[in-house]
Image 1 (tube, one colour):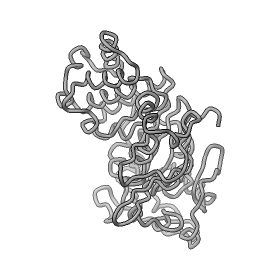
Image 2: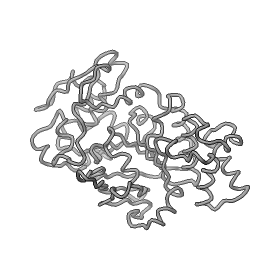
Image 3: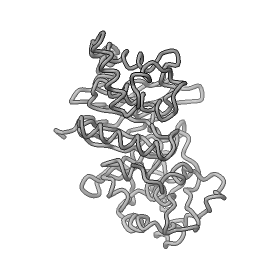
Image 4: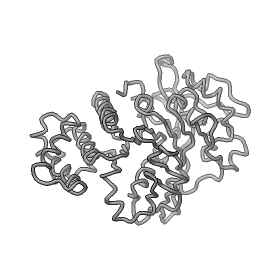
Length: 376
């Protein structure tokens, strides 16, 4: 597409270990347009963070390697660039906010020095112009009294302020693409709402493209234009947010939405996705979700489904995607899976209460706690 800023095609990132090859990203495909917000959701270990690190060519070494695919940014394949070219690109045109600001900020440097370092490297600012730009950035991310805070160290700030500092560093050089890897995980609901509102304001002012990685489907519903559902290193469903929430077509996406508590459900039982994600060092031959899928049939364990369109801008990797339309509409009505008739040949998904979750189930508890709260 001509208006696409970032296009990832069949990306494969493997980690070579003593016990075998871990296929952290195994054929991920998606795109992002200028000014758009793409949400990437999925359970822990599905490959979300590794996909983001692969885009920036920051895969952990020596074991991690990008072994296939293309990462086209503004028409250029990032995998063909030299390490020096990637260093010039990171921070200036593509930036990333990591999950834990205490792990990404240097505890031995003031926040002003850390913001100034990026501006001096990529924009060549010096002296008074540099100091003024640092103060301006702290003010832009709504940090009060920036003239004093610029001299503070990360440990002297709260988690919310540290995350805003990380955001100030990320937007300091006005990048075209910002990747946010679960930036609200350690924030309480009030600060989380303020932070997300701030990101949207910056996006509107600069036409910034945003890739937002999260477990919280409540944030996705409020913040994102499109959603990519990731499982076992692959994108299994991709489409507009309203389509994913109203008519999810992949059984895994249906399961994630059924895990959410709602006012209509009250104190009734919550649904859990039975089983565990596959070992990425030993991924099943066919569909990776088949061992946990309530609609699985023999061919699912033999054939790996491609990511194919089922509607305009709605892609699904499922051999039975056409049969999940009714399943998706019922999920949008948020009725428990256990209360709807099972599809032909399907197994009934058992329900569990919020406090007595089934052993081995893996419905993300953080989504349960926060989904009902307003995201922004």
